[in-house]
Length: 343
Image (cartoon, rainbow, N blue to C red; front, side):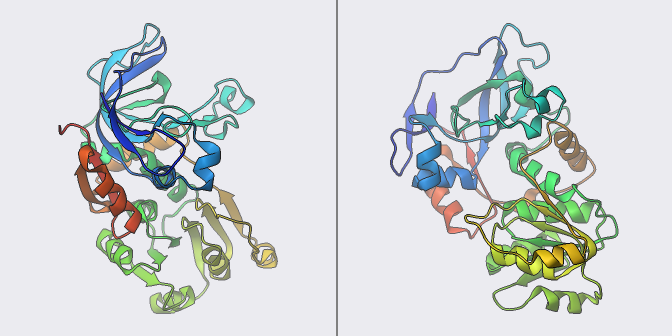
């Protein structure tokens, strides 16, 4: 099979031939149709400090994918050959306190598909049966391939009730855009998104936010004034990982406001904890998806008419992976998809 491999501890990836995988007793083999390029994949490609201390080589990378089950292990009981599936990229231990209590998204021993174990940027991928999500309704393969980051967005957007609330989203990358779609679909009153990229802010306007703010030119307080708000935002979603974004978010929250924080800062930074206390704010860290409650929510949102198609802006055959990665890294895009069905 063709696979995109980090062959050595150095920058770059190689599209090469590997033996087709076979399933273990509890595994399924998926013929991969589409994959989505994630920021994690960009880190592995460039071989930055994080990748160098985290990723073993050689390794098939990639964790966002969709395809068809083509083989199952002897102990598999639910997934069947022919099922169209997406994959949960977090591989949990199953034996820690949280796993045994059904809180698998809190497993402290989580390993990553395409990060610690061979992933899905290949014509075939193998993973535990418990990590596949079978689509019972029709889902476009491109959309099914991004269920992993879509799940991050849904987990973030629905952590706190948004019906009738004024919502602030900091960061208009693909996850921020999807979070905006979810918040709007779920009944938020106003949805404001911020970024410094006019290209991404224009994408945000296309998905229907009430206001897209370039914070290099204007502040969040000005957005409040433009919308006629007087008490601050009720719910915020920090998905940029930028210290300035969280600081300005705290400044513009209503008393009793709630902040879901998905963005991962690159370094420690200071915030005004007195404002958090005096405003009685809630700040909750978000990581990955709740397994599998978030997946149910994703499927229902799509069935009820949520449209993610504007978030997917570029599609490439897997043979043009270099161009695809360059496009994703440049940032003038939404989600970038690789097609593994084209020779």
